Every structure is written in structure tokens, then in C-alpha cells.
Image (tube, rainbow, N blue to C red; front, top):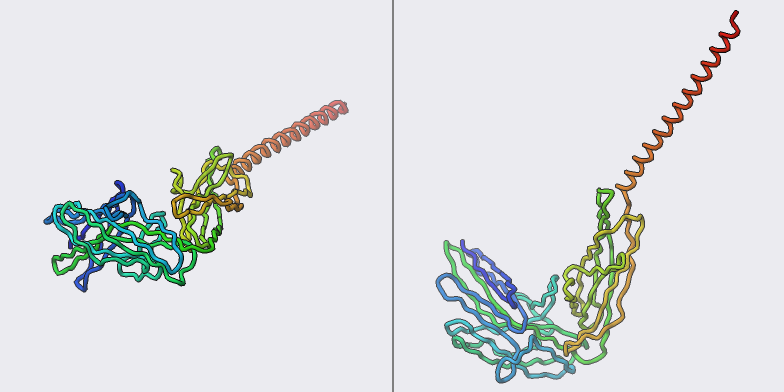
Length: 357
């Protein structure tokens, strides 16, 4: 049984997805990427690969945007465009879909797969269902974003993708893969903007059993965007006058949280000497991401977390030294008492010899 492989590139970053279905039917596998230029390649050994790119556009063609950012009143709509570039050597018909968007646990944007129903901003987008693009050509497709009258103020995420579906089989099995690539559509519904972030932190200590080496501390920070706008967050802690960021943010890359998003991040702090009860400060810098891409800084969220860092190796060494010194002390005291006894016995023997005629 042969498994198909799907490769999506986002400026050189490859993402693979493959699903094999039994004879009962085909299973659809979907992947999504967003960048200034997003490309997908799919094919098999018998056909030349199909490669395509999807970007925001104006009526003339790609306009350089990475994704679409909108700010609309409830009950209004706006027209926009997307461009599908067929980079392969044959004409291809692509399916066009829109779906609710979200951020993955690793911080990348994605949209719901085709087998899941959209209930939010993905339903606001209308466009043609398919587009046929000649080999090496580009097609510009208009789409419309319509905000419902009852839409709540704040940020709403969706994605648009162009996809193709391939199917084959061997040995009585059936293979199905849906390959897609697209970009995100962020819509802010005008109204009262409420930025709120909740945080809960816990910590544990990892002891180094070498008494001459420090251990390390691991912090787990649970974040939740309880407001209605997208937040940019950067958790960190300060230990020994050094800042230690959360995993995945070392290269000045902050995390984004959509309204209602929850994210758990970890912070590893090396070279921490065990000092018993320790208190570590956790600070989450935050800002509101505006529709134009700018970030408005907010007051950071701070919390202190307490952990037990018991110096077991050092206590063991100290106990051994105390036993050693106690043994030396009692041995010296015992030898001194023995010497005093011998001196007294010698004196007593001398007195007896003097008293004997």
C-alpha cells in the first residue's frame, strides 16, 4: 500500500501531510500555509508535479500583501481579490474555499479542514467555488467579506485556500489527498475593544546530583486571551539578572493569541542553585495587534511562582562532613580519656610501690 506525500513550502519551510484510507473510502487531508508567497506542490511518479501559489491581490494581480486585514462595522461588506498562480506545466482547476481560522499550538496560522463546519468568520466570505488557471498563468478572483449585523466587536479570523484533490489506489485500497495553500483574512468588527489576558504559572526544580553544579527550574505558563482582540504576548522570567524567554520566542518572535485562545508555554531556566523555597517572577509582555499590523503596547501581566529547591546533594555532603568531624571529635575525646586513665593508673602504681617496704 502506497502513501501519498504532500509538501507545502512557506519560504523554505516544508510541511508534509499524508493520509491513507481503506477500501471503505477516501479520507481528505488538508494543510494550510500563509506568507507573502505561499506555494504548494503535489503529484506522483507518473505525472509532473502541480505547483501553485495563492496571495492577496487587487484587480490587476498580486499586490504584495502577506494576508488580508480588514476593519468593518457590523452589517457592512467589502470586496477584495485573491490571485492564484499556476506554476506547473499544465492547466489546473483549483477549488476555492474559506473557513474559520486559528493558531496552532506552535503559533502558526491554520484554517479548519474541509470536513469541519465553519461557524464564524469563515462563513462571512463568499467567492467562486473553482477557478481554472492555464499553465504558468495567474487568475485573479474577487471575493467579498460580509459582516453579519449581530457580529460581536473585536477580531475574527478566517482563511482562504486554493486546493486540488488527487485520488488513486492499488491492491484494493483507495488513497485520497486534498492539497491546499492560502492566506489568512483577519476582520476586526468595530466597537468596544477589550484587551484582557489571564495567566497561571507553576514551576518545578530539577536537581543536579553533582553538589558542585547548580540545577535548573522549569516554569509552565498557561495563557488565555479573555478579551475580544488579538494579542501579541511574550512570556519571560528574570533570574540572576538574566531574562529567560518562553520556548519558541528566543528569536524575537512573539506569540499571537486570538480572542478565546489558550496557550501553554514553558520557560527553562538553567544554572539555578537550590536555596530551599524560591520565588521566581513571571512577566508576560503584551500588546494589541491593530488591523494595520502595528502593536499597541499594554501593561505587562506579572505573577510570582514559588517552588521548592531542596539542596539534597549539598545536604548529603554536609551530613557526611558532620559525621566525619563528629567521628574525629569523639575519637580525639576518647583517646584523651584513655590517656588520662593510663596516667592515673601509672600514678597509682607509683604510690603503691613507694608504700611497699
